[in-house]
Amino acid sequence: MKPIRILIPLLIFLSSCSGKDATSAASGNYGDDQEVPPLAVEVVLVEQGKLIPYLELSGTVEGINEVSLLSRNFGQIEEVYVGLGDRVEEGQLLVRLEDNLSLLNLRAAEESRNTARIEFEALQQSYNTGGTSRRDFSAAQNRLASAEAALEQARQNHRGNRITSPINGYISALDRSISKGNSLQQGQLVAHIIDSSSWIMEGYLGESQIGLVTQDQQVQVSIPSAGSMVETGKILAVSPGGDLTTGSYKIEIKWTSDNPRLRSGMTAMVKIPTSGENQGLLIPSSAVVKREGKDYVFLDNQGIAEAVAIKPGPALGNRMIVLEGLSRGDRLVVSGLNGLAPDREIITTLADRREALE
Image 1 (cartoon, helix red, strand yellow):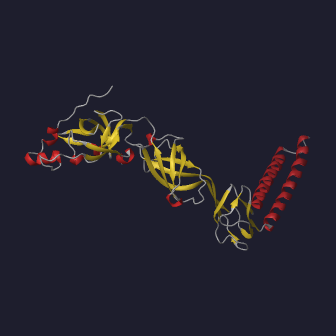
Image 2: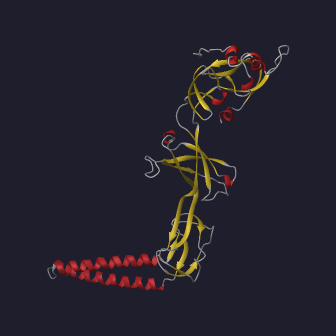
């Protein structure tokens, strides 16, 4: 049902003025014998909307998987097979250490395990026929278990001399000390590898914002330092609880990109359309005129300025929800308000609604 409009006569808009000032306010300083020319104004169409149509946040770009590869062994580097920026595959050999000592230890562990196994099998047969006590048999079992554990450790140590990539990706860091002939320490960083098949960014929202987003919701991602390209991503995860220190809520954004300029560590800007229904008729707060403690707006009524009383609702910045007085599709005047009075002829230009709400 179309709302009942309260049209405001010119007198109300001149009530705060008197004499010549009142005439000036209504006519824009034109004399009584002069015709008041039409006033050029901008208008926007009244539409449904939200006080918070989108949220913006920024964060640091990361590959979907990033690995800092540490050496498990110490030793001399015999060969380095990759360089900075190289593409690597999961399991690909990156660095090989001198392995003579680890190979000797492996063979010694194999011999110890074989000896323990032969001893255990012999005692097992004797134990089954009653020729060996339980204590001696249990001791043989323990020696075999210890020898097998030592063999597995020796195998791991030997494999540790062949440092391979745990993921598909690119070498993003490789210290100059990782070179043939240098010594590598246990726990030393060998390489940093980035899987850039997709990208991820962490961001944080306050408690008044977290309820406006949902998991899998689409977002727009831009990387200013990588060009003007805007790409579509989604909210990968939303924290169910606030950070214990800051009280903010973490979300994760994921997207894919073919932009060759994009790098891990760059700053991403994310725009998230808020979820939920429109809250009501949305207008720019700057279009509201106050007279005698009441709120009015001007509408374009076939080229004539029409002042209409409204009932304002919640507002945020330059955005206001109107509860009563307007209808969807009304042509709301958003400029030239200082020189405007009811019933004045106007020449209108349709303005960009999004810009008017900024």
